[in-house]
Image (cartoon, rainbow, N blue to C red; front, side, top):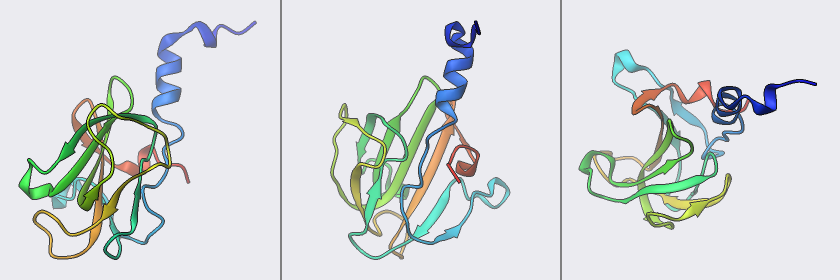
Length: 138
C-alpha cells in the first residue's frame, strides 16, 4: 500500500497547485512579467462581466483600501496561496465568507488606477506574486 495519503507534505503540494481555474473566460490582454512590473494577468472585459473565484477558499479581504487596486477581493486557499482580483465595479462577497471554485465573487469594472474595464488577477505564494499560469488548469 502506498503511503502518499498519509504524507501531509505531498497533500499540501497537490492541493495547492491543482484545480485553479481562470477567473474570467475573457481574453487575456497581459501576462505576468515581473521585470515589466506586471504582477498578475489582465483580462479584458466590459462593465459588469463576472469575476469568478479561481479556487475554493476564504475571503481574506473585500474592499477598496488599496487605491491602486480599486475594489479588491483576496481569497486565502491554503497556508501559502492567496488569489487577488482587482479593479471590480461591485464586490459580491465579504471578509470571512467561504467561496467555492467558480463562484461569482465580483463584477468587472475599472476601479482604482486603471482607465480600462478589466480584471487584474494575482496569485501569491508566501506573500510574493507568482505567474498565475503556474497553477491554472490548461
